Length: 116
Length: 115
Image (cartoon, rainbow over all chains, first blue to last red; front, side):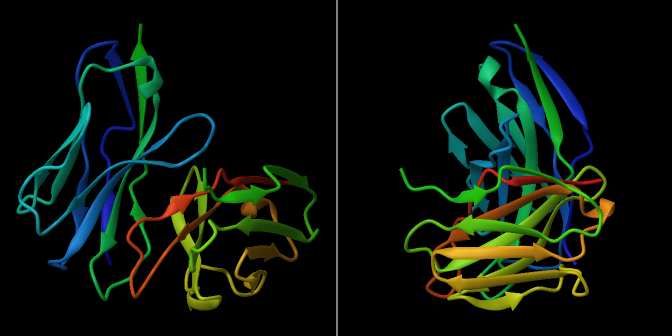
């Protein structure tokens, strides 16, 4: 079974600074997808960024980028120019590729605090 | 602005009572997922459906939980009888599949408290 580990229960960053959230995963599959979700206090799960395992290029979405290290099974999220609205729980998630289970397997989350 | 809706947003009930949570997937989506979020276990899949048929309900306690899709616009998750350990946030997510869901869109969740 696949597992996802987020080793940082909490992180903090100063507004306008950069922060990196860590995620590692364990799988024997070669085809899979990785995601970062944001959960603000409203509880809404919001997709931040996704990465296809077959793509070597790291995904980027505006101020959010990932460092995907397939061999190390590592998938970190970098938030640049942090804003107060980035404060939330962040979850790393794994999903099997075509033909596998469509369920998302989540890590336990990292609570990000942004200090003004 | 298409979105998944869930009702109720919050529910407080007493142990032994029946609880029904409802989800309206995004119109046109044919796959519905139910996840449960607790402090101890985090987010876990309970069950998911495609075209109203269950594909995987291995995460769902069968003795007290049941999930159905009476029609394409409504998914229900029922707990009978409820227990304090069922206290959690229950999320519904939907997606469109022609064989595989590309992206899951989450609802705002139902926070259940069982006293």
